[in-house]
Length: 251
Image 1 (cartoon, rainbow, N blue to C red):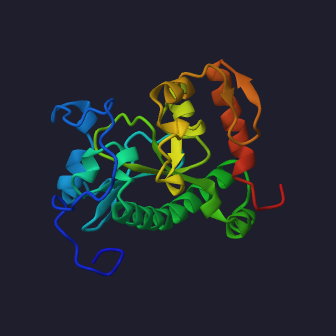
Image 2: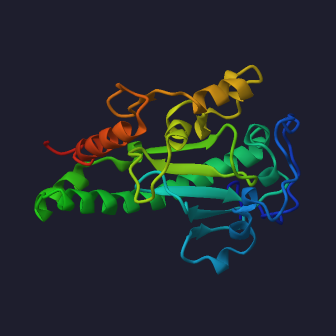
């Protein structure tokens, strides 16, 4: 069943009901063997990837990002065609598709929240907090506010995907400065803002490239300009993380 209660069409047969045409800067025929198609196997054969797939429906599959940029980082991959092959700005012009993807993202958030609870609890104990106190902090916290749900204005992957990522930007997997900017500037467009107006600057390639290439880093939590030294910024994020995991309790 789809989100409106009707029958689900085959993933490759949904008519496109949007008004936009694919952006000229968006290549719609990436080589199937290129790195830009790394997400396709999870859409076509999710059962072969039980280590990463956390939810599979007729409309979309949700996976754990292979290279997370936060404590919890999920990707929602639609199965609909032609939507999954369109630039997100265009795909979300289709109201039926947008409703479906918002519903899928909400379900992904329900999976992500308990994952983050466990991560925060473990981090609190690792910082020296006793179990009872850590449980109290976690119990008081409203975790839904700790996530971003959105898409990159110029995705690195061909298949459309929505990020459901915790705000912390602290991960076991090392990442670079441009990855930080991709999630902490308007380069990440919240799903709730779609469809974008035709004159929205977030549609402009030059505007978004400027966001991605910014030299200075602004802390997502304290708002300070940390400068252009990425190593210094990473240390700052680690420090902010210790405050962030304590939010909701008496620091």
